[in-house]
Image (cartoon, rainbow, N blue to C red; front, side, top):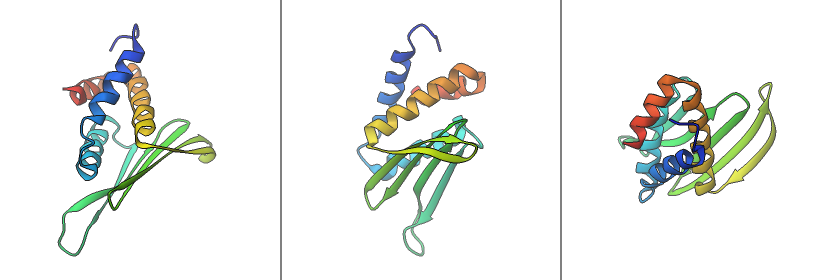
Length: 129
């Protein structure tokens, strides 16, 4: 990933992530799987069954990064996104984000992470394929 046009990279990633938005549960599952690969140990995915024998579905995606936390909650066909600025494990500021804003914030974080780590860069390139 080149540092020359970081905005283009963020926009490209955001567009790639939004491509799966036609079905929220499929979007959440695809995103959760990708994040488990790109950010192992920092992406926490909560899945629950929708009944006794139903398949497990993503209920919550939580990303805990250096000074930021992103959370996406999927509930009965709707989503709620939040972003929190963190310091010492305490949320200093928490804001609600609509899905587009949340995807853009996630894209910015992933792009920054890719610029720091070769492993994240390779995983991110795989997300765009």
